[in-house]
Image 1 (spheres, helix red, strand yellow):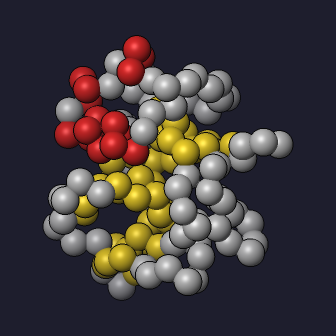
Image 2 (cartoon, rainbow, N blue to C red):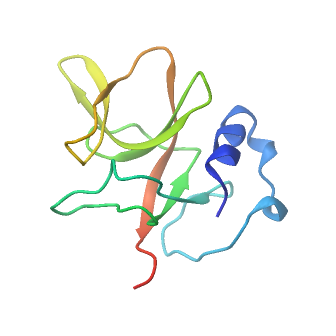
Image 3 (tube, helix red, strand yellow):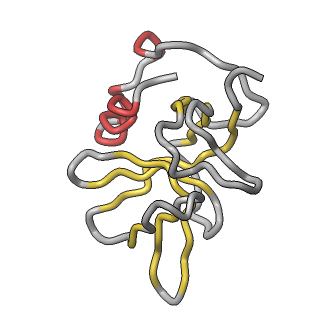
Length: 128
């Protein structure tokens, strides 16, 4: 597991992430590749009243390389200002969107300022 700041730095230079910089290690049956990493969900934007739901504290496994961008799947994206976010990617009518599962939060239209930096391939709710 790494911090959201480290995830953003890792997107800029994949060599920034070395095993020694990880905060904790978690296992998964999913393959996130050699550079895969875990993040902890922050905030309530991905908390839904139905499944799937990723409440704050959920651990997500990110595959940062070798993934396709598929509408309906979950990704970590980074804005050019350095902000990183976890959302569902939706492609509709020729445009890409970063969609929160919580309707109280705003959908973000993808533009040249956003880059998808990894696909979420596993999730674990903490404390179960």
